[in-house]
Amino acid sequence: MDQYEMIRTGCRVYGQNISAMARMTGHSRNTIKKAIRCEPWGYKERSHQPFPVLDKHLTVIDSWLAGDKGNPKKQRHTARRVYNRLVAEQGYKGGESTVRRYVRFAKLALGIDTPCAFIPCDPEAGHEGEVDWGTAMVLLAGEETRVKFFCMRSKYSGKHFVRFYFCERQQAFFDAHIHAFSFFGGIFPVLIYDNLTTAVHTVLRGRDRIEQEEFGKFKAYYSFIARFCNPDSGHEKGGVEGLVGFARRNYMVPVPEATNMEELNEKVLWQCVAYGKHKMAGRDLTVSELYEDEKRHLLAPPQAVFSNVKTSAGRADKYATVIVDKNRYSIPSRYAGFQVKALHYTGHIEIFIGAKKVATHERSYGNNKWILNPDHYLELIGQRPMAFNSARPIRQWRKSWPEALNTLLKRFCRAQGETNGIKDFIAVLLFYRVYTAGEIQAAVEVAINNNISSSDGVRHLLVYTSDTCAAIAPLASWPSLPPPDIAVYGQLGGVQ
Image (tube, rainbow, N blue to C red; front, side):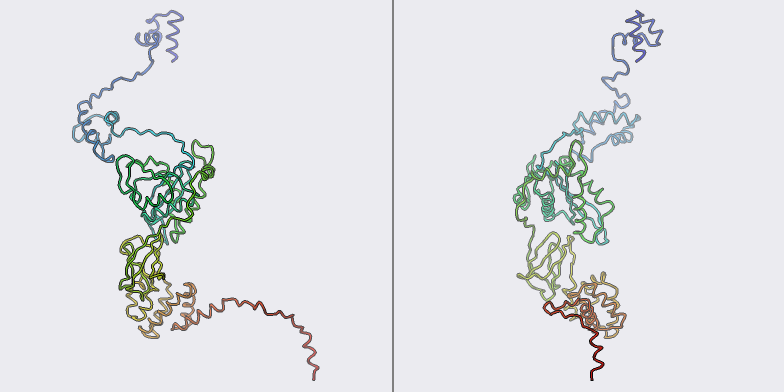
């Protein structure tokens, strides 16, 4: 720039000619003329970029890229793949950067993988929410379990709700919405979804969808509008897409541990409540402050919660189990063969005979699993003691019961014989109906230490410890007496 100034000043002010300025600066006469005429100084972009080495391969490249239009997006030619094919199949000797430069403009001309621009938006308060699912690994009762987590996010405030489930079935989907509406304190008039099968039966052209019948009922009950994204267009609800990753990185690192799903959801709920002390880009208020303002714009929830309970009817089989959703759940063995009705909740199953509830089980979402309560079979096993060791309910239970019970069983069998010992041991197991597991374990350990070899002895210990631990309340109506005067007893010695 200094020489540019010197050339123009020398010619315009001091009257130097082109030749003199060329000798002074060392530039060519043409460069001096450009500076005097104010033509662009420095490098000038070519209007047309030739590809001397690649030129004979351009037709092949164009045919490859044109053929990609009908292929899935993830199975189309990249610039690297084009380069590798040219080297392997066409004997190309040029550089990869040349291929990349041509492929970029060729795709743009063919309308393939064109760059996507986004529109900055300013959402309306309390109008739209976004919904999505994610997958994570957790530790439940010390066991690695793969779970799903539901996410709902406000587009206006950025406040979000996360909840764990064992599956993405429709019943869990509805249950998650019910908890989310309770968390937000109202209902978003518009909720944005992917084309998930729990809500959409058929994807039609454009924005038209045939919705699942039950989802239509749920949507009508809570009076919100469902809006579905175009296929493969997750960016249309980019806020909740980002939330899935945020929740996984922040709420699930390190891997969360809990004894059951209720405890796990309680932990993540407190994290969602605490979220919101920061400001989003372009906002003057924090997430929590925006959320407080948003509450008054949400739809009020109905007085009664949507009934999210499914029912099924059947007959208990010869194993005293009822098939519910491809799994077997036990009932007391005396009801084998009875007609039953099952209520399917999200987290548990209740089984009824008539109006009487006979069993409650934690719900399993696998297939062909046997969910057995050992207590349902104890009387039956007591009648057939030789089946004790092979009985599936007992084998499942023995994996978790205290070692003291195994020691007590061996003592009973040595003292009474195997058959009578097992029968008497089953009487001890029946104590679980009345006493807690901790009380029974303590009584069994005392019985072992004192060489007790019958269930009557264990019963005595349970009754005795329960009685001594219970405080005896004084009679409320009994009159209180004054403290005795001990000095009076000294006068008794002189009485004849």
